[in-house]
Length: 389
Image (cartoon, rainbow, N blue to C red; front, side):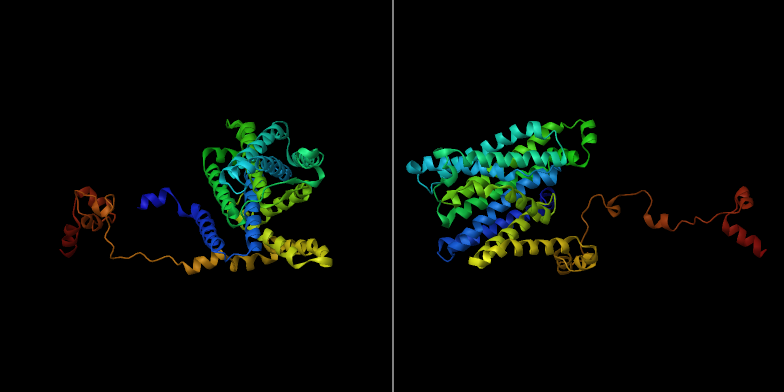
């Protein structure tokens, strides 16, 4: 049993268990009719944001490259996946799992191919240059669909079938679990170590035999694939997909999620994406009418306060004293070893047979002997008798 837990560390699977339990509870509530439609929509938006944040973290956090075109890959998946769904819906049904799966496959593969085409020339660039190229790609995709005409709806947007709201968030969270499975296993594999080596020092990684272009394309394509999947899921949660949703501000919003959660931290991206999406949806519900103009202002102020709390040096002691990890450490105190427990280790010192008993070895007199006495070969007892004589 111990070897099983050593091989499969439980801390690596906590996020799976939390998401699965979360999904199970809300699915039961939804199927029983106890979940409001607004809550179902909120769950859909949170799941899509988490897929986007985790997938972008692969490029920005793990690979160390700045990409601002994530909304463009999502736009490709939303339009092409939504188009496939609208073509399949009359024969298979709007809420058919087969329609959903085929649309996910098409949207994800097309986005991955676009990532390959953009990545071949663009990933040879670095820093701000790569950010500008990916940002331009996202804007080009958006403009193309805006002027696509009747095939993709043009400026009016593409009409897409609406999946059953009672179960759509279940499919979204299942897709999130698949995304986590691929990305987390990649990060712990030799391929993930090669990608992080490129992030830490590209010259040293290249000198060590790491194929830099290959691993950059792998990370970029995998990230683009799941962005396309998120776009397809977005199209199923809407009745109409419009190009203006996928502007550069949305790419920056996804980037903010992973920066707040911590670059390279999968669990941090999950938490930050869910919190930011919750904040956006609730502010849109509360600030309506003339107050809608305050939404961006309140949203920006909250983000500024969160960043100050997370990074201000003056609050370092407060953060270290009051945090969830420290609280969990106090609750879960390490148990003292029980002295009555019998040792069954075959390699324990007490179990190794020796020719000389250990007590005799420990009781041996190792004190230095006078050189004159050593020359005569006298024992300590003989010296004591000579002294009395």
